[in-house]
Figure (cartoon, rainbow, N blue to C red):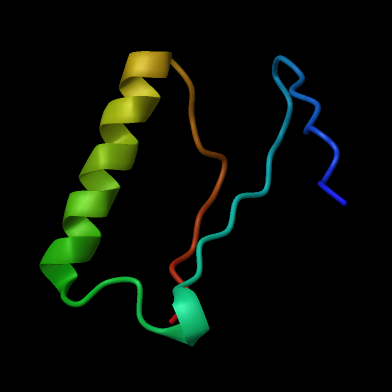
Length: 58
């Protein structure tokens, strides 16, 4: 049975997670993490939005 669609509320708060398959590392190096941070930053600027807080859990 499929999951119900998410409700998107303007100005809402969302909890986003990312985990590697079989708990493998997401980033192979610090450079990989920096590239990911840069992509997220670009999207935030493009969409005129922000992040309240984040944490890389390893």
